[in-house]
Image (tube, rainbow over all chains, first blue to last red; front, top):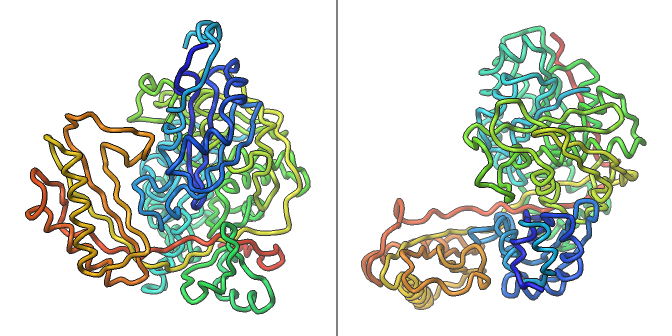
Length: 114
Length: 448
């Protein structure tokens, strides 16, 4: 097992709906999707965004895209024009999620040669 | 097969992209999204000052510049540029085109500001979809209220023979779905096809954000961002479609770039709700179909709901944001000290805010606590302090406490910009639902 940051095996895009940020997390190779699905749980994401996400975290699975979608409620200081944040739309939360560390089997990492 | 291009992802997007879409290769339709969530309130204000204003002027300029190609190549255009005054927009476009034979259609009826009180009285609460609060709580401060019509209303306008269709508030996805419904005469209960057109619309509605813009995968090798191609949907009658761009343009369309855009601003992927249908994003099958081509198949949809979404804007107080930049040495410590001093002074003045927020650009403005501690020798840090209040005067007073720190606080400070920060009125967004029976698209065509 290798402990790596998500940025090694996934990419992401984030956006907003009011005070809720969404982060779509996508496996760089289909082989990594089960690793994402088993380790990047709503609970872990909530803990990862401690101090940023003040509400609950919901997770949705898109097996067809090898992707997960997270909704981070109460994460944008009110959201939209109310927000005083520089990143009022959570555009950089995609990269913030990719900081998370997870365990990936060594053979999976070498086989996919990313 | 028809080619539907997007040339504008939001109000403020590239002025050149729509013209490039017209000139760099074959397209049948050009779709343009000019409205953000609070754009309507800005346009509403413009109209209250001038009854002929209240629409996206960029659109009229684009038509004037592209008129010859639009006429010669019979390109049909669908744009939500009408804002709160689509009729005036139509007149301005007709003037810019200078071609009397071209029919221009308008989809209106979305502006419901004059019927809000009646609706509330009849028991339509217009509850805030996020908070559940009834509209009555902010009714006196409402500035605009518009229904999101879908692709069906646009198709009806195209069915009249209009070459250009100008709408008020419509869904972004409807701009692309509308031409498909019109061309292929999809029926209101062909949910899978309507879902496919909706997902095509979602994919291209943010312009180049699906053709390599903002793409995280191998972004360093994405060719020629300076000439990035905007997206084109090649749509088949059965709901299968390909996303591509004109040959020779920059950017890159891959399954990865498309997946990122599919997930942008996504809620529950099984229930993407529009006035036309509910699209299920978990049914999409993607395949690379040659360079800069991605093919979509397998899309399933479900019946539409009997509600329209409504976009209401209301005045929600005032805010101001000030910045100061500190250099090495001890840049972060200086910025933190400056923040403490500023807050102490605001306290001494007895100023109370609904919210006050400090961020440190270069340290944690994007990722907060996840960013960790900065390097000790960090070259520079930007202190950014924002405040919000219902009382304009306290926000005003705050703006006068930033500049003095250039002389009476920690050293090596610059970056005040053009002096005192500006006080901005906050126009906030109130999403709600109404029964579809409460609003009807009004379609009209200017006959040549």
